[in-house]
Amino acid sequence: MSDYKVYASKDYVDEIFKNMGFQYGKATVSCTANTVSTFNVTFAKTYKTMPIVTVTAGTSSPGSVVQEVSVSNVTYTGFTICVYRTNTSDTVVQWMAAGKLE
Image: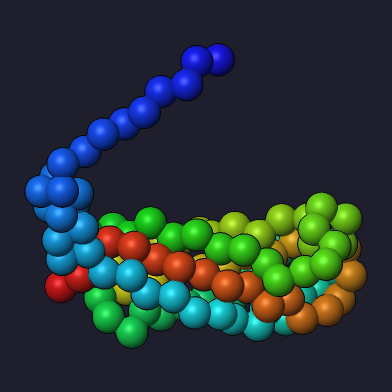
């Protein structure tokens, strides 16, 4: 694998992030063992473009107890957090969304 660098002018980077809006938070998802548990999040501000949403679980046992954390149903106004774990316990999920705001 070869190393490569990507260069971008300040004007190009500024244009990409112009009017870009970031929103973030955390949610506590009440989980049922061996079932996909969900939690709906509503953004404080509506996006003009479809946002990119990332999530991560606050856990000391990723892959064994907390087997999956993902998003679904992403819209301009919110999304759904999905958690699959092997026991019944609350899971704190941190999230961040990025896109152009209205």
